[in-house]
Length: 426
Image (cartoon, rainbow, N blue to C red; front, side):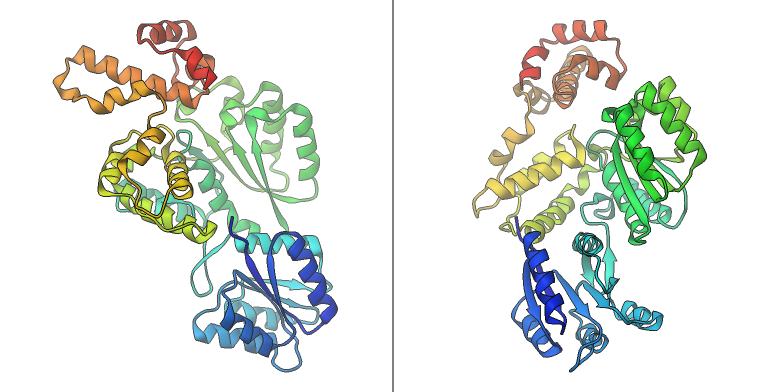
């Protein structure tokens, strides 16, 4: 993975050396500058992912240096540091493009958090924060996706709680993190991200203690599969809304239609429902998504730039994508990581697309040449094989996911010659 380069500009050598030691131990590549001249020279010689800039320095102060970089149009992410700054100074730094401000004496834990959060941002334009990185909903021309992108941006301006309904891998969790990102720029707000089906009653009690005295943004993944014991405790917290700023939760579309008793208890407190479409509903945008994620991984992980051939792109457009945008991202990442310098061919991606060899039946046959009965069999075999793979070969989990009685599902798998025992091994 690519290590991030950080420039520290401070005339106090003890602080300069301390920050170098701490950030180096965290895995960052650190360059030091004790004055504005050294800082200018360092930026000419190297591109930095982040700059920590002291305001008060003897030769040129940090605000003046920030202003120079801003006027040159290559500012990048800058965090200001000072022990004597006024509100006016902080506002001026923000106006010039600084993304954050930390006070001296420095709190190391707070500084590391600010550094980590700042490096997660993408600066596509000078001083403009872009949180859409890794979100597919601002790319492409599909009407459904463009409308979803508009809804996401509008939700950022409201105080509404949000239920994100969609299939596995559709990007629900990424949207939740995107919506919470602006809120958590306030250092007094803490984000808590929980996986509801796995949290135990004891762990939830610890969570309640953590809520006490804090302002919280709560992300609840898989809230529709919560246990009865945890559901009762969560219902109590959601009803009181003590210290909770906003709640973002993810559910499956099936759960909204067939609410379990435990999910019904807390549903009314979880906010408005936003539908997140599966990738197959906007597959025509895949060529744009490929460019987007290739550039993302090349920049983020320093991978070699490669493109997908036209044949490979057409194959991807016609794939059903049971794992949705998450599956596409994994395929792109793996193709860039393991490939050569040549473009990515159709042959290279086939093995990754076909989880089971029988899945190729649906894509290899002309369904319109089949009878209704035969076409139904081909589709059911493909659909159940893909879903079974996503459920780790567990028939009980599959039955719950697609809303079919378990005994009937076992019979159906047997009739379609789908070996669920073999799928479980995989």
